Length: 129
Image (cartoon, rainbow, N blue to C red; front, top):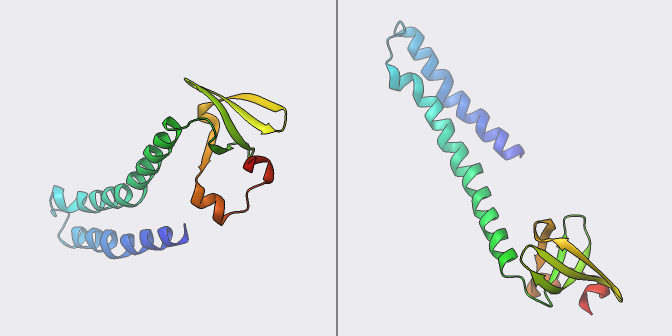
C-alpha cells in the first residue's frame, strides 16, 4: 500500500501540479484536454494497478469455486479448514473433523488448498485425513 501511495504522490507532483501551473500562466486558456489530462492519467493508473488485478483475482476465485469437487481441501472465510464431502449447486457439505459435517454456502469459501500449497504450508492433520 505504501508503494501505491508513493506512486500516487509522484503522479500528482509531476503531472497535476505542472499542468495547473501552466494553465494559470496561460491565463486559463489551456484548453479542455489540458485540464482533463491529469484526471485521465489518474483514471488509467487506477485501472491498470487496482481495478484490473482485482477483477482478475475475482475471476480466478470464481473459477476455483466452480471447479470444487468431493475431496477438495478448503479454508472458509471464517478460517475453518475442511474437506468437501458433497457439492450441490451453491451449498457444500464439508467435513470439519471426524464425525463433524456441516453445510455451508459456496460463497463463504476463502481459499481452495491446492497440492502445492498443502506441501508448502502446514495444513492441520484433520484436513489431510
